[in-house]
Image (cartoon, rainbow, N blue to C red):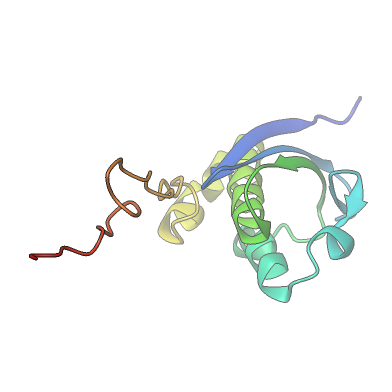
Length: 130
């Protein structure tokens, strides 16, 4: 019987992660590179491993991901969201644990656009009375 591969998409800020997981020995590949090479920061790696640690599936799945857009932490957040959704596709009974940790909900906070006639999104030009 062929191994079943599960797919999910994760998003965070402007980063989008397409994630494929299949049963394996726990190898994680991001954009055809190893996890340690693509995400050198420990905080980013901690974010990525969070859904796997919560569900107790660390080292049970091979994860392959294509990530684009955003910065390093945004991409790590998108990858975490994608892994969470893929794990839900594998086993639905882990939903309660992941929901309690707040990993299922997409973090919709994005940068506010700059408004015309202003210096930024909220900041105005200095007012001069005279």
